[in-house]
Length: 258
Image (tube, rainbow, N blue to C red):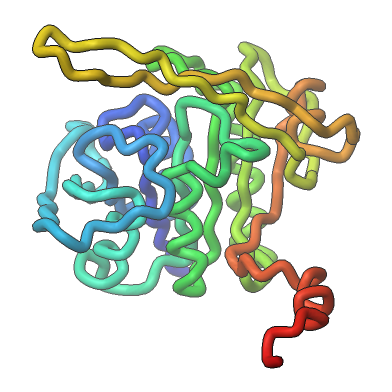
């Protein structure tokens, strides 16, 4: 039986340690093709390139025998998936995995995530997709404890499929030991209390650095943030149909056509 074709991408760039770690796990499962940004694209969300030229080239990052086919792309994570599906792959991948992101994409962070947007782009095209993130922003983060769970989750997704219209948002706690297990969760309600550090350049122009404090507004014990705080891997099935179905009856009561 042919090995599954696995498309691997990320938002931290093609040389990121998290991506290299994910590739090593995926090579144990199937045939791997990598299409990833040529530079960091964190926080890009689902941005795509429409007003400038998009470049891609084959690159060799791993010199070892059996290294996967890899392409760097000048665009965003969503661009990488679009380009892979339309131009670079000779057949439809069996699954797309994105990550491992350097930093949390749990709770509200999923909205801004380039990692998850790459997975969502694949999901829109009907491809099972998973975004993986580690709650450690360090470039030297330890990814060793993620391998076993990643292999388990991807293997199960290939075996059973992922529910139509959803992708999986998987986050790992910041730890140097094996997680306590895997929990399927809902997204915690949270927000960023943002502020801007205003400064002035030597030429007299004002500029700003964005900073903020994460505010968890949810005390539930069925959320991704709770699972992570207890040392579990969180798995949140995430839909890309943004319709608020529960709100339709209320808005229908407005006098919109009078």
